[in-house]
Image 1 (cartoon, helix red, strand yellow):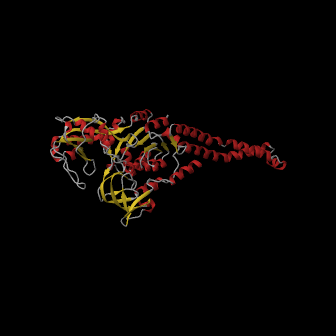
Image 2 (spheres, rainbow, N blue to C red):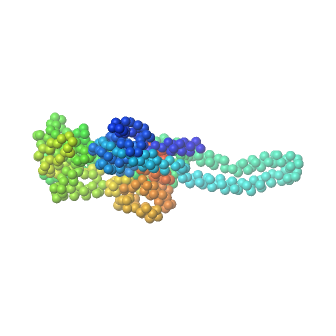
Length: 522
């Protein structure tokens, strides 16, 4: 009772939004206030690192990028423009902006997810149901048995009239009650709870937190495991796959890439490229001019005066850096084909022309006569033990299904890298049927799904359950909360959102999906 009360209290205190205060502009002044004090038509002041406290529509922005991974599962930050709707729970990654509030409290997106996640329910336990059936049938059988035992004791005392007149009925009643009491399986529930408690203690030593004892039993019954990609199979960062130089590339291109990686303003993709090129030589001349990366122009650049780096170097997407004129070279088409397979590509281009000088408020322009020098192919960094864990599930007879908000091609590439069985194609969830029976038919064979919304994740869990499966769901974002809530066993990462950890039955405290799950399963 105490354990179930504690779980319910945790859900009641569930808070999707982690930001304790919001910054709003009222009467021309920026003031801080509690999230609960934000009202409709307030102007939210958005800054990097802060969470959007309410649903809003963007009014004005400068280079604003939003991370919606906790809500949608999409790992890549999104560049937004005025007029775009922002959901509560999103995080500002870069830039600044103003947004007008359109939904607060129960009307906001995060609150709607929270409302359903707050509904308290016990873990679906076959063991608990079986014990309940045993006790129910024993209780029904005790009624006639009690009559027979009491009558037998009275007859042994000389019959009902003699026992009642002599007072022997007292001893006969005590003996009958003792006999009936022995028929009640008083130790059954106790010993079951002890066994589950021992299992929970063993899991705790493996850094796995159990919110409800019955969840221990669920580990033995799961036959389908639905997992998210970002934060579960992958580490949420990029790694360099390969560097391909274009024919006729000028000398020094690797040193140019090294400079982009060593730049203090380097983004995560530039840092990943730096792992595959030699470090910047000490004593190298600094660039004469630079252009920092921004989501507005989607490229970064540097201009050098002499040495092997003479000229302008630009790093960015092929379609942006080369533009329409470069499409005939085949590099843009090749980059698009690689991107379709789930990888990210960046093009390093060179020009002998200087970087155009622009003012502080003017968007920078590319130098003329840019020629492609090298292509960098990056892939999401997969957890080193993910493939071994997928293999372990196969040996245990557990089917693994990847459900992600990312692009289907990206999800499929990761699934193939971890050698997920039957990962032949990725399904775009936007094409999935809404009918539960039809959805269940798709899930009989499909193992990789992308662009899955939070509601679809829940629907997919319910569809798998309708096929007779015992379903476990893992996740770390708010977008996973509803699916975790309705799964037979919800598993959250310790580094995940508070809402996800609160609704889950198990929490992997070290955030390591692979090691923690294998230890827990054993």
